[in-house]
Image (cartoon, rainbow, N blue to C red; front, side, top):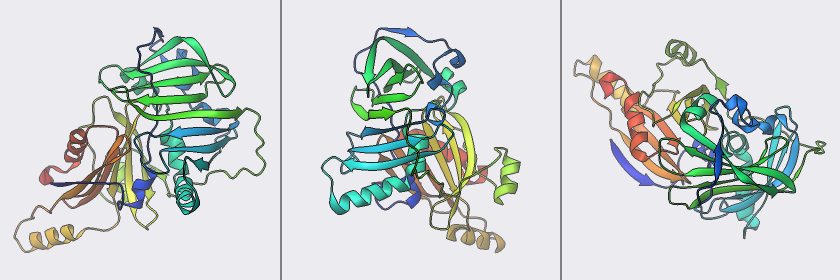
Length: 347
């Protein structure tokens, strides 16, 4: 398999949805009290998404120190009605104006669904979270946007690396500030509410409407084959601590469908995309060779490996399959994941 390094520029529009996932974390080791292993006995943010149940509106500052351009530091307005509806609207970006700002704001609105679901810190699976993460509450309280918050540290239990620091509203469990640090103590991402209202005026709110034609599916191989009309690839070698989260088909805005398998370690999402529409030239060549009695040749494979913030993305054709993988995992582990998904005859 040929590998090329590259940038996010020029990859499929689908990759644009996969923006930077955020988190949090301080440099010093806190004085802390471990929380119970059972997430159901812990604070609300460990077992559900308070953003969907707590109506609120506010402006928050988003920072990605490693990103160049308008995405490095910007502000956005978030509004939720407490019943599952939400809106995220770009407000401004540090040192950006004119056409550059208009282009950035348009892209952020196009990413609205992904940003809400995957960029912010969230416990996506309490079972996997309890297995892979350790949560400690620090003794001090902090004030964010005029609200009293408890300070938590969230870190992996067995895999060395970065960690999160969360400022949690003591009354409603909203995450009002978060920072993510890498294993060397450098900030990867940060989010801070500058103001927040718990009695938002919802008149005129324009709620997010999905545009990626996402359709949730049953996870069984036979059921998937029947639903999508093709045998799905099933990764068997996942990064340590990861497990399946959900299965869906999505569109990429260019009349192409993808099977999207989402995995998680309880917090971080990892995506595996398989192109579904139409065969490749390699598939046609292989079928013709087999029919002529020449055997089925191994199709050429080539992928591009690039970074999307703190995540690694791999996109290309592998043994005739159009694939894309993105997640916060080492490149070697993502390549192993791809290799493990291939049929026996292709490996």
